Length: 71
Image 1 (tube, rainbow, N blue to C red):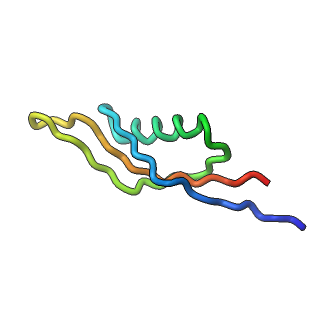
Image 2 (cartoon, rainbow, N blue to C red):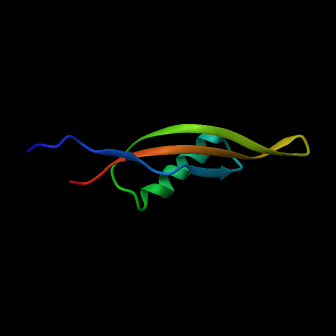
C-alpha cells in the first residue's frame, strides 16, 4: 500500500534577535534544522518587538514549522 506523506507541525518556535524579523525567522529555522528532519514549510504566527529609548532593541517572531514524518 502506498502512503501519502504525513505532515505535522511543531509547537510554536519563538525567535528573538536584535537585527530584523527575517533574521530571527532564519535563525529559528536553522536551529530547528539541527534536530528536525524534513521541514517543508513555516508560517509566521506573530511578530512583536521590544523598544528601548525609542529604538527597536530586538524582534520576537513566533513561527510554526511543518515537517514530514519518515515512513
